[in-house]
Image 1 (cartoon, rainbow, N blue to C red):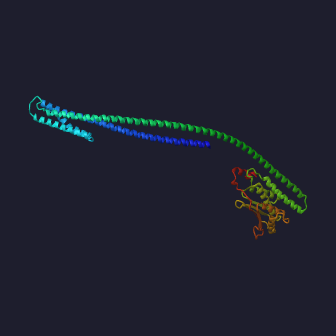
Image 2: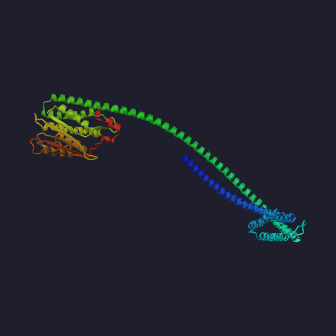
Image 3: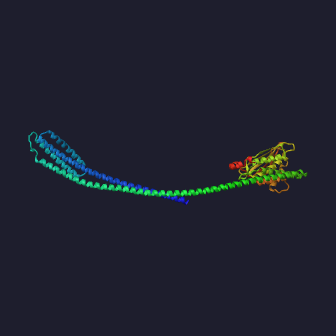
Length: 493
């Protein structure tokens, strides 16, 4: 038990550690990822600002190139009077406005740059106005020199170059600042990514160590379980072998005891049969009626006990026998010994179980009343019927009824009073031996005996004897195991 508890504690510990490690890993990964994302966004913004500066410088260069195209178109037309030179002039003139609009959009958030762009645009408009004036003045004149190019156009062009150069210089300063900012933020991004990678690597190493520890603990647990299982299997096998040996020994002892019991039972039956034979010898050599009656009664009772003993075959641990087949067999022997073929005997006993001692007592008690009916209920040449019925009265208790259809027992009331008196005082000397024996057997089960006419008012009213046995315990064959039911089956009797 201690080993299993230790194993569960280890498993719980490593499970909790793995959970904490996973949570820390996820938290560090999320934080590192967020830092990397923030640094990346900063870097992207810095790169956008650098790109913005380069675009502004490119637009300024395009603006200066457009101004030069304006001047070149003017000079070409003045020198050659060729209108084809006006096409580049017109194209440059249209692009000036577009470039101005683009630059205003690009630098709209920077006031100083927007003011500078507006100043350049004003200068550019002065240049276009001066060129337009020159072209209008030189409408139809023929000349081959720069007579119409005044100094104001040159001055405007120089001022325009200076303004664009100043704007480019300002943008260059911004470019340098933004480039340094971009490089710094790139370094931070690289550091964040490296930190994320290092954190992931460290957590992976920790997870690997934890996993190895867990695997080692599981291997140790598995080894402990295998060892415990082997020990338990060895103990179970040893115990199984011991139980098998003990079972075989117990089975042998049981078989020996059963064989001894059968032999003893058979010997008792044979001994009682020998006693019955001796009593028969005495009966044949006895002329005294009283002695003859006493010997005959003793012979019948001993014969009933011997008959029951010969047929009892207790071969189960519960020591139970089937009383239905036992009572039938004993009464058949009684009928055979009495030689009463003119009297029909019917037995109604359900298939119930009782101990051997109880069954023997019940057989002797039944035999007493059946023999009594044979002797007193019918005349020498009368025919009739005697019925025996046994039924249970609840879990404990039964009722035995012996009934005949004879001429009726004149001394039934006296016999009933004598039976009750004998049951309360078995040593009473004035009652018959049969009555005393019946009373003693009935008292064994806290019972009572009562008599009544079976068919009052008839020519042959008969006699019904009711023996109520309050403490007679009978068992149902379904309440014992299948093997025991087979052992107490009727075929065993």
